Image 1 (cartoon, rainbow, N blue to C red):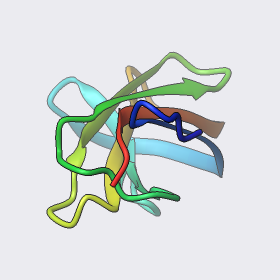
Image 2: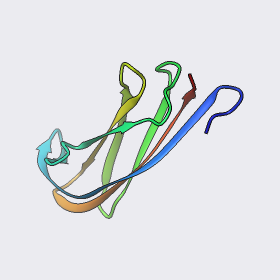
Image 3: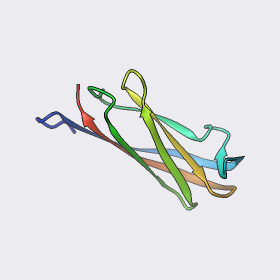
Image 4: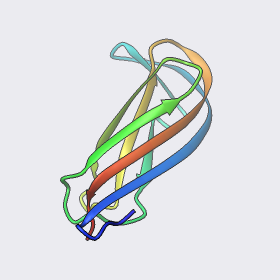
Length: 102
């Protein structure tokens, strides 16, 4: 959504699919196939890197998610997801980015 005052809000839901989390690192488990992250290609470029990005994982497992900053061109960001224990579960990511449009 682009507002007249320059605010841009992007929202996206991505179904990663079934993931098996077995790789232990730093107290969390990640999965091998996607290396525990998804690169969200934003539908609109932001004017600068001052963007608030959040991600939530919808899953039957206890998940930890975090959003990396924008890529240098401002067109994408990495969303990381992990579990607290080894398991296989379906992963859906819900992401929101808020900033100013270019």
